[in-house]
Image (cartoon, rainbow, N blue to C red):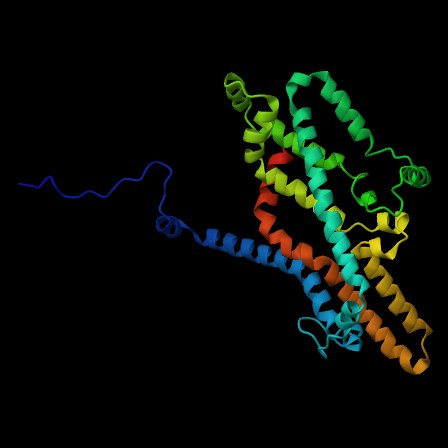
Length: 316
């Protein structure tokens, strides 16, 4: 008599296919496609990362070798002369300090203004009013007062040679506002607001206690956009800041680069080649020094960045 206690293989739910079974079922054409995909991904990684790597190795290489095309994957004639010259200038530490302050304080103010405004514009209760407000916001992306009227306005407000010129005029970026509004409008279920309203929660409580905790992705994206914009700020310091102690990093690096370039052009013939080589090293070093903090920060925000861009830009 056949035993009925024999253990039968467990059945997987529909749609759950073991990975080993899936690998056994793959055909030769599937393996070829996988190889092509991996090669394309590797090529994209190389295309993106090689320029950064080249700038790094060129900044510590002999510039004659760089000019002759001998520097490709590894440094040639390794030395730190360019970075030594950059960091020997005390102005760079003032520039780093200023840029960090402007970026952190500016980003905090940006988020404090942008997120509530985006949430308000995402609410359907405002009706046609929100479209009118958004239209005037969007109009500033295409129409501006011009350089001279803007300078006169900032001067009359006391923002010339004032560090607040980096903070207040850029308190809201309309592009980031639209991204955040689209996210709140499409990614946060309206049923959550209905439940909150039943519990007697106000709009402010709903925004702070429910919407913001669910919006970490778009918050990271918008914050990164704002931080990068503040970190790369160059034109504002060039136009409105005359005091060297208040200039951001980008303006300081430009001053260091120009001073060394001018020194190379005005030096005697015997020293001209050496001065020019040092100026070229500083040129590459300046690019890497200004980009390094962002390269360090971005990997920690990458997963939020990718998710936030996809969720926040689905609908306009």
